[in-house]
Length: 292
Image (cartoon, rainbow, N blue to C red; front, side):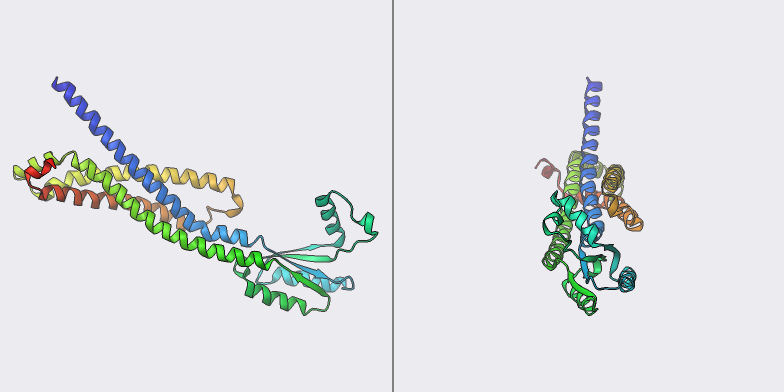
């Protein structure tokens, strides 16, 4: 009978440990994924900004030398990521492919212009800087017009600011929730042993002596939970990088390593503090208060 009871107690203890580890791992995993989002949020925003194209339309009277010089200067400019020359013939072929019909059969001529598509660096995709660049380029005699979607640029920048603010708010809120959830899991684990704590105290054991095994056990659970969370984060990061290779998510190696170390340390610190507070609470309770 005693053996059966001991076996039941061991299973209950193991089940309690597993639930604590799972709770810690899930919370740290979600917190880590949010951290990865924060680290790569600027990179994601920059990726979308760099899809904005500034198109420079060139007069038919422009000399080939002038066009080549302009293309080279644009390719070397601080604000330019890439400059692609599109002839009027290539533009006509692209339009024909998009519309499914040859509009030149109706018009009898090609009304399109030679152009240069400039893909800008993310830091220069603002209304003010685009206006400066546009004004500078339109001063050239052979440049007929400079076009870009200013409304899209303003909308994109406004949304980036709003999203960045909300990501910071959610990060702070989620960190607080993570601490509270892990603390609750640890307190429940310690609560189940409150009578053992009081018994040890009644036979003369010091508070430090009583706390030590509980803290060490919780720290070990925190380490296991943190390792499980880090494995999950690594899997998510790997598959995200494989799915979106253009974002180069693994490029910020130092920040990613710092995040992984931070999540590991956070798991240890939260479990240590939570266990200390929980055991201290039961150590300060009177015997009759343990039943409430």
